[in-house]
Image (cartoon, rainbow, N blue to C red; front, side, top):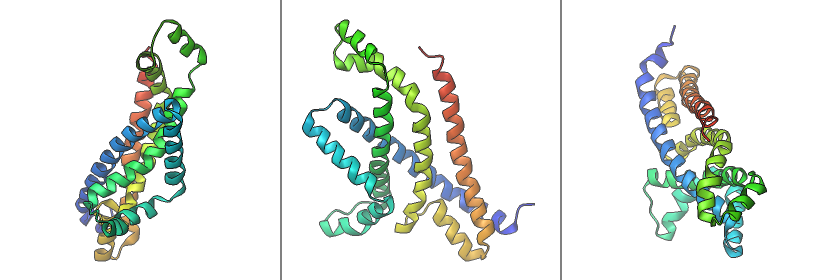
Length: 216
């Protein structure tokens, strides 16, 4: 039997989950773009660009996401930069996870045998064509599982935006607890919704991985 407090607040939690999915989708798109650009710059860029990329990776991966969210919310206004909280949340999460995505993509690219690079160069291909025809199709298959895992971590990390006042699933759960005084029921429901979102991502990742096995 579904607990009454959870049943009465189910639609409210689902509305919070809808916002979480939208926030996650925007952040995943941004982090994927940032990760791809950083990975290519790290692997093939000139030395000054590689130094900048290394600095970005060390800074972002060495600072907790919560600190970056606080910096965006409290410190940027002092510098005259006033971001919309939703856009700011997507920007910070996207840039933060872009560093982790870049390592997924870079590892996949560099994992290809050197003989394939040499064969492509022997055919007279330039780097953009080698990446497009030889590297990306194979690297995508290699990167798919860790990419999906990183996306799942990103979804769960969106719960941190409630700290800076953004309304999403975790914030909806906290508000429902204040009304019902039933934290176990409400947060059990919140955990179940997060699990369903991440399970859907994991299932899609397995489906994608199986499909890519037959793509040559």
